[in-house]
Length: 242
Image (cartoon, rainbow, N blue to C red; front, side, top):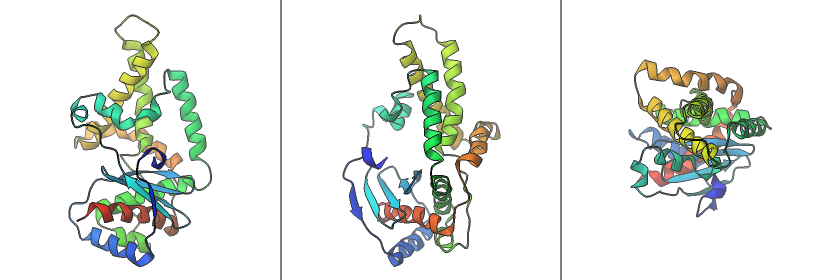
């Protein structure tokens, strides 16, 4: 994520500054929605406007998120594809999608990435439950499972891709695999976002495969690994809060 975004700068927050920011965030009733991803050497946390990459060595790289035109963000399917970005463009067929998924899973299993993935989820859950300082001190352990994790999206995209491939209404042409993939990704993102915002229990069923898969893609993080993710949270919220 950081490599593709503009205005990346290297910054630093000492322990006292991080704790002060987390305490301030705990006292703020409405925090921005956060997402993120784990890397082998750290954790990325992002809001709609800012991102921060906190490394295990204590350094932080931060920058601003790109903002697509508001017009495109209102178009169904297109808005989902914008969020996915060009990183998924190589997925032109189901076999390639499966191959890439295997490669991504192999990359995720390297080093401490699974533990940092759990730390990422825990830090975001702490921001949503007002327990950032308690999570920093190890006194609270918010869930390491997240309904917004990309694992949940991956668990949905495969059945949607198979259905779209079988139900494609147009004659088969050279562009068909590419078109089916784009439609599948857009539909999956629309379904994924609907499930996340819906309070209906039936909708939550769609999250169960991804949440179950997170038992493989996350591990219980240590306090130190959680603090890495919380540093990234503090960096983002420092710029988000007035």
